[in-house]
Amino acid sequence: MFKKTLYIFFIIFFYISPSLSSDSIYIFAKIDDNIITNLDIKKEGEYLKSLNKNLIQLDDDRIFNIAKNSLINEIIKKKELEKFVDLSLDHPGIKAYLKNLYTQLNLNNEAEYENYLLNKKYYSIDEIKQKLKIEILWNELIYNRYINQVKIDENLLVKKIQNQENKTKKEYSLSEIIFEKKKNQELEAIIKKIKLSIEQIGFYNTANVYSISESAKLGGKIGWVDEKSLSENIIQELNRLEEQQYSKVMKIGNNFLILKIEEIRFNKIKIDQKEELNKMIVYETNKQLNQFSRIFFNKSKINYSINEK
Image (cartoon, rainbow, N blue to C red; front, side, top):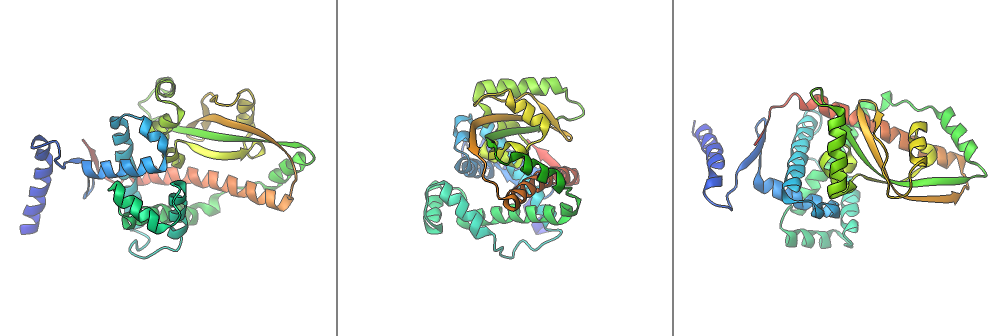
């Protein structure tokens, strides 16, 4: 009985505390029995800014909402994972992911990253590792659940490779915004809102705000992509664009895509057919698994009670 009373007091305290002082801690979202406070959101915002420096160009309210949604998604992923795996166990993949984080910050090792986190005063190194573990295990769950549903036409890919031989290869450095349309929304209204956002705060920050892709945390950046890895309709659209321009809205499955060309480069093709085929298979596999990930997440999300302030 005491514990229950204490829990109720805790909830009431957090709801009334904003009026007490500007430094109060209060609840902004609740997912089943998990709460997200303003302090949690502030910490997540600082973490996301370390992943994507473009976020600092956004106003505090936008960063706040991005961080809140990031935490909601993380909690849902964690709850789903707990049905299948023991999250208390170490994961061998964390070390590589962690190294990728601190090298992006021009740090040399984990110790330097830990000092960096201490100075920033948001997440501890152990909290970062836990966040990375959730992402890694989520990707593994999606892989194990859907890999048998991935369809790759290797003959078609081989033909693409053969057509590349003795030619110049065109590659794009791309960024993306992938968004969805809900039943009660007008597509044209969403497109107008996104285009206005691009004009006002730029493509990368708009990706942070509106994109449902995993690349959103990085401002939508997906890096260099071989033209031949893309579908014909995307190639046709990109061919009419120049660097720093973005595409019209294209439908992909149940979602919609806008691509921005960062750079275009041409390289004389020296093809190792086996290596090139493997690259194309990996790219296509990841693309399909990302689609399955969004589908599975959205199906999982409806099973949870989400209350936002």
